[in-house]
Length: 303
Image 1 (cartoon, one colour):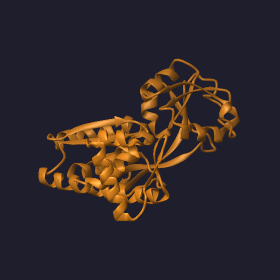
Image 2 (tube, one colour):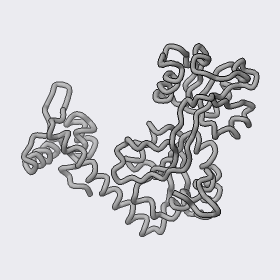
Image 3 (tube, rainbow, N blue to C red):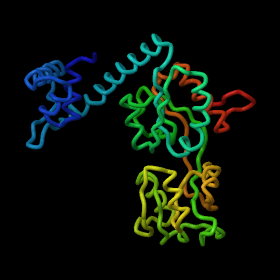
Image 4 (tube, rainbow, N blue to C red):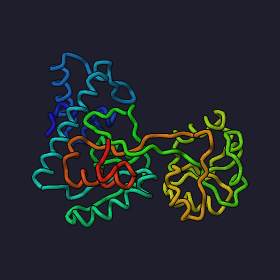
């Protein structure tokens, strides 16, 4: 178990109040307060200020927070690694995946994993990085397949780059823009379907159109990529998606157009905790994704 003083500190940060923190970790409030006082005594610094709206970190508390989270993470990583060694594998492999992977590459890999690792259940959470990356850091998923984000705090994590994705515009074959040269100004004024209300994607799209978020309207935000495709199929709505999803998009009776001037490109791959890397099923998943995405040459994986 992680040191109780550190658990108490992190619980207060997450809950924002002593009462909420005590309930979160199953302690009486006086006991929680004692653990906090002992920690502050050991560090020789006050970590919180009491405010009317709750507990607020001091500058010392902000400084200590990163260290406390790393201590907690290291403990989780150690538990995970030892458990995998004892079991000879994972009882459940939890995969977070963005559209490019959950619609195309992950299903191909799952077919092999189910056959080769019959004792492991495979759970797939289809979502964007904004949602699944915090789950990875908390230990709620084991790997994330999606955009590689080097600016993230990736303590204890590894990233395996697989392919560079390019964003295209999904539309009906009969759409007025289907045979035109696409440009930023030419896309302004059209109505859009977006996956998971991805604000970063909308900002990038607005930048491509000239920087005005008011230049287009979002009609539908959906957590289902398939629902987004169906909405586009039945209207003149537009939708952004990785151009590499062309096989899936064409199966839905749609086309994906890539402007001459790129809307945006981004690196994609697998992000995982370093403690998971040696686990056989995780290593095999990465190998299968390498082949599926074309980042393997002559049977050899490449970095």
